Image (cartoon, rainbow, N blue to C red; front, side, top):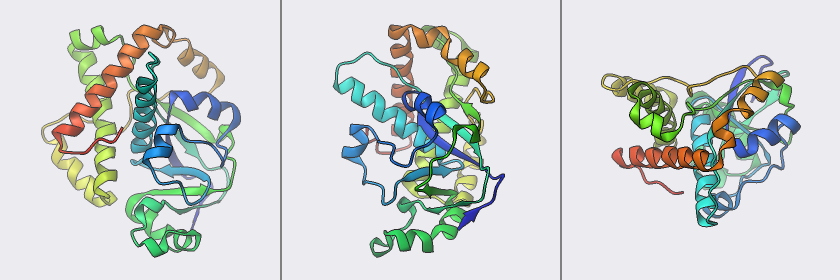
Length: 252
């Protein structure tokens, strides 16, 4: 399957890889951290995973595995989930995301080619294989509301925005674990929104330019290691708490 030039897709990552990506683009041989290597099956092909809503699952997985690894190592280092909005600048070959190819005999290159269109149509997830995607294809980036934890929990408005970021990640995590189709997720979301506030993206979505990158990286919270770690740990705990409320197993 090919996605046409101009198509908007998303890629989920975390702050630790964000700098590398905006400097060097998406290299097909990019390495996952040790926790993901130990807990996830190795990808069948090297490439860049793209999605729509499921990109927020990718961001959650990158963020939580990073926090878990730092915690294991006794390091007070923070991280945050980040989602990149990409506009394809040429027609791109897309293979199926192997997590949504359910027959083991089809989990190979031929199977990923065969099921690519159906998987994208039903789940809106796939992989662009063996291609370095330039960073200038990234049109904007998303990150959660950044405030000191003490401010979040003492300010109703901040806490509500913080919770919306959590739910974006949690419901994408649910979609992945349930392997729910786009239509099934939409139905679930409608029911969820009857009683809960929700937005379809993380709190901040600046366009990608050198000035917005500089402004982002100069944020005071990112430069205060102890406060940033406290914030990241709070985000991690709240994410885990909401998962457990929904009866979802949390791996890292």
